Image 1 (cartoon, rainbow, N blue to C red):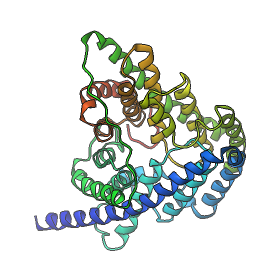
Image 2: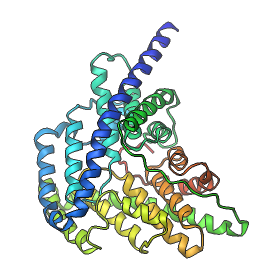
Image 3: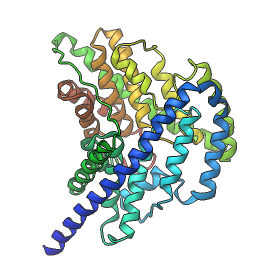
Image 4: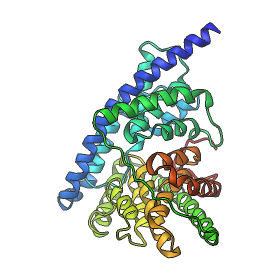
Length: 394
C-alpha cells in the first residue's frame, strides 16, 4: 500500500514537471509556427518553388541525426503500448525544425504530431533523470497528453486522446488522473505564456424531428470522409515506398509535383494547417465544393512524401469544409455542421470517440453536445479498420 502511494505521488510530481516543460516547448514551437505561416502566406509565390529542396534537406537531417527516431509517432505508439522502446530527446529539435521547414515552403501538414512526439520524448528524457522506476507506457501517455494540451489548450481532449488512441476500444483508465494533471498544467503554462487557443462559440439551434434523416446522413458522410483520409494515406505510403524506395528521390519527385499542384490550386489555399478553411467554413464564407477533397489529397501526399507535421489540424480543416458543403446541400446551419465535421472526421480517422467528443465541448462549447454525441457515435461506428496511425492496435 505504501509503495503504491509513493508511486502515485511520484507520478503526480512527474506529471506536473512534464506539464510545465511541454507547455514551454509547445509555446515556443507554436508561436514560431504561426509566424512561419504568416510569412509563407505573404511570400508564397517566392517560397513554394523551393519545397522540393526543403524536402531533401528534411530527409538529410533525419538521415544524419535522426535515424533512431525516424519512426516518429510509431515509436511513441510502441512505447505507449508497453514495448521496450526508448525515445531519444534528439527527436524534439528534429521534429520542431523540420516541421517549421515543411510549413515555411508550403507543405500541407499539421502540428499535433510534433506536440505528441515532443511530449513523449520529454517524458522519456525525464524518466531517465530521476524517475527510472516509473512504468514507461504510463509516462509515455502522460507526455502525449501534455504535448497535445500544451499546443491546443484542450486538456480534456488531450488526456482522453492519450488513453484511447493506442489500442482501439481500450481505455487506460489508470493513466487518466496523471494525464489530466499533465494536460491541465501544460495547457495553463502555454496560456500564461501567451499561446492563443482556437475556440468558436456555437449558437443554440433547435432540433426538428423532420431533419433526423439529414443528421444521420451527415454522420455517415463524416465517417466516410475520415475513412477515406486514413485509407488514402495508407495506400499512398505503401505505393510510394514500393515505387520510390530512396527517400531523397521520393521527396524530390513528389515535392516537384506538389509544388505545381499547391500553386495551381488557388495559389496556396491548401498549404499549411488549413486554418483558413476552418475559419471560412465556420464564418459561412465561400467554401468550394471540392475544398475538403483537395485538402485531403494534398495533405496525404505531403505526408507520404516525407514532409513533417501531423494530420490532425488538416483533418479539422477537411471536416469543417466538408461540413460547410453538406450544410448548404441539406439546408442546415452552416456553423453547426462545420463544427461537427471538425470533430467527427478527426475521430473517425484516428479511431477515437471520447477525444472528439471532448474537443467539441472544449472548442465549440456545451451547446454543440446534443448534436455531437449522436453524430460522433455514428461516424465512429462507420470506421473500425482504417486509421492514420499505422501501429495503432485494432
